[in-house]
Amino acid sequence: MVANVIDGKKFAQNMRNKIAADVKELKAKHHVTPELAVVLVGENPASEVYVKSKERYCSEVGINSCTHRVDEESAGETLFALLEVLNADLDVHGILVQLPLPSYLDEALVIRAISPQKDVDGFHISNVGLLGTGQKSLVPCTPLGCLLLLQDQYDDLSGLNVVVVGRSNIVGKPMAQLLLQENCTVTIAHSRSRDIQEITRQADIVVAAVGRPQFIKGDWIKEGATIIDVGINRIACSDGTTRLVGDVDFESVKNIAGAVTPVPGGVGPMTIACLLSNVLTTCCRMKGIEEPTGFFE
Ligand code: NDP
Image (cartoon, rainbow, N blue to C red; front, side):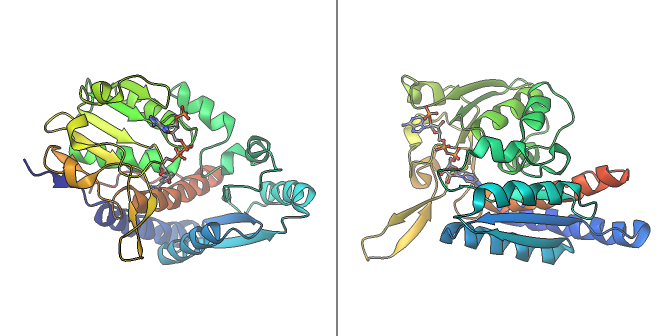
């Protein structure tokens, strides 16, 4: 069997086209332009790249974005004061603090200082609680992107056996919650799990969010299973260059799985598309406008 390679890049492009059309309609009908505020603390080169890419995609779909840079040394006070201002600003619909933060800042406290209504990353404990209790919330972008790809693969996820490898607050746990809402039977595996291969071999779907290059091998999965690879790892090649790989060993998995996401070009583009979608959602909710739905037309 050769797996169907799930084209996250194309799916995300279709999503962005739909979001751009929705933003255009919002501007024309309601004279509102969604706006995202990105807060960047310190000078982390990887974060700089992510922030630039968010700015570019916002601009592509017609969302305003504004990046606020906070000095690493003065971050404590300045950051909380800035978040207060952004929370109160009626023209700002989404707020995102780029992670990771410098180690002396308490990430949980910072996230809690973002208004839950503008929390487009879906990391605020109010949104986490709403998601966990099956209520309308803002959903973290990466798991939301994975769910959309899975919904595109299956007419109904109900009853499927899913193993999520990884239990982080930003990927593994919300992924499991979303899949539970879809009536999947969900197992979460992590670094203390025993015999992970035995667990993943039972799964109709494996979601890998481990942060270890090429961790999940072909002989860990059931024939025909769908494999969603969240991982982004840079590894060294023998010629001295580097390349991106996922948490799944694509080469061995592709001959056994029914479908698999590639890295790059799988989950990554979906994360940013879901961020844009969340900004549109928060804007509509703040303005009392009906939220656009459906990315499958
Ligand atoms: P974290 O490091 O926060 O979490 C990793 C999880 O994997 C932990 O729960 C950990 O278990 C588990 N784990 C680590 N080693 C093992 C092991 N040997 N066996 C089983 N489980 C293990 O990572 P994130 O969730 O933030 O990210 C995961 C991956 O996804 C990374 O590669 C990251 O770069 C990528 N990522 C990609 C995004 C995208 O847009 N595509 C967005 C966000 C992340 P324990 O809890 O026990 O320590």
